[in-house]
Amino acid sequence: EPEVTQTPSHQVTQMGQEVILRCVPISNHLYFYWYRQILGQKVEFLVSFYNNEISEKSEIFDDQFSVERPDGSNFTLKIRSTKLEDSAMYFCASRLASYNEQFFGPGTRLTVL
Amino acid sequence: KNEVEQSPQNLTAQEGEFITINCSYSVGISALHWLQQHPGGGIVSLFMLSSGKKKHGRLIATINIQEKHSSLHITASHPRDSAVYICAVGPYGGATNKLIFGTGTLLAVQP
Image 1: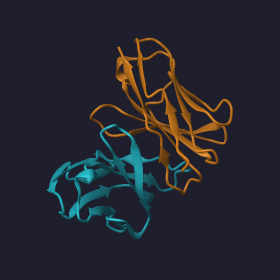
Image 2 (image 1 turned 60 degrees about the vertical axis):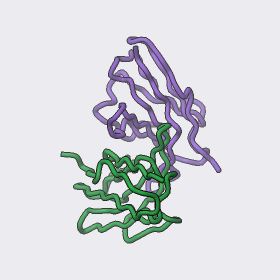
Image 3 (image 1 turned 60 degrees about the horizontal axis):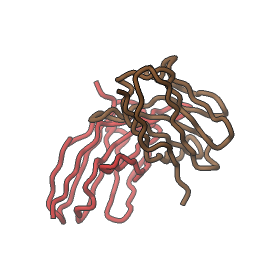
Image 4 (image 1 turned 180 degrees about the vertical axis):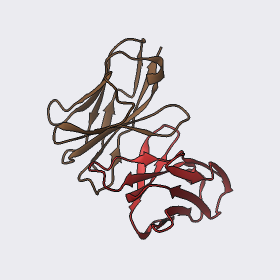
C-alpha cells in the first residue's frame, strides 16, 4: 500500500543551524502539508502546497520557514535558523484531492539544543 | 477558545468495554476526521466523514452537522486500541482543506 515517508526520523541540531526535513508524498497526490506537534500539545498546521506553490500558511510559518518540491517527488521543509522552540515532531501529509482523506508520514522528531 | 474540543481528555477502560469519545467544533466544516496516534508518534487516518455514520470493524464514527458534534465509538475494546484518538476538522470553504486538530483523547485499555 502506498505510504508517505519522511527522513530523517530524528534530527538533532544546534540553535541557529539550518535543517531540512524531507518527505516523499504518495506519488499521484496533489496536495501536500506540513504540520508540527510540540511535545504534549496538539498538532498544528504549518503550510499547504498545491500546484507548485504555497496555498496557505499559518502564523507559525514565518520567514524562517520555506517549502520546496524540487523534483516532483520530494517535498521539503527548511528551517533557516532553528530556535529552541522549533523542537517538535514534524508531520508531512498528502492527499489526492481537496475532498479526500489526508495520509500522514511517520514524522521527524526535531530536537534543537 | 479552541475550535475543536474533545472529551474526555483521558480515558481508562477495561478490555471488552464500549468506549465513546466526543468531539465538538465551532467552525463550518467540509469534513471531520478521526485519527489515531500511537506512542511512537505516527498518525493514522481512521475516518473522514461529512454526514451520518461510518463503520470499520469495531470502530464507528457518527456526526451531527447541525449540532457540530461527532462521536467515535469502539466496541469490544482491546488493549491494542490503546492510543491517542484525535478529532480534526477541515474548515468549510478552505481551498486547501488544512486540518484543525483537537487536543486528543488518551485511551488506555487494560486487560
